[in-house]
Image (cartoon, rainbow, N blue to C red; front, side, top):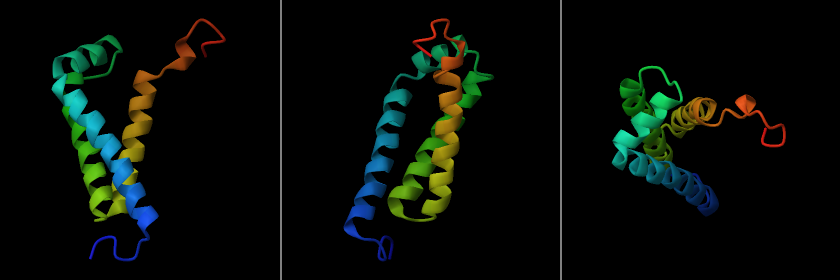
Length: 101
């Protein structure tokens, strides 16, 4: 059975991480137009395709981790998602002010 070989702390960690991604994904999905506009403003290529693809990766990774079904693949999906989104949304290297960087 899933999570059978994990301790309580590891099961809770899986569920906590997955829950964070699901909550943020739902929040973004409910603000579809606003997220697409922000992606467009940030220069994300093909935002109308990139956003649903990002949500699919985000939810799939979270579900795989939460269910402990191919949690390794789920973790990889969440890492790729996080690194990619961070590159588009948190471009500190473009800040003029050195302290802000």
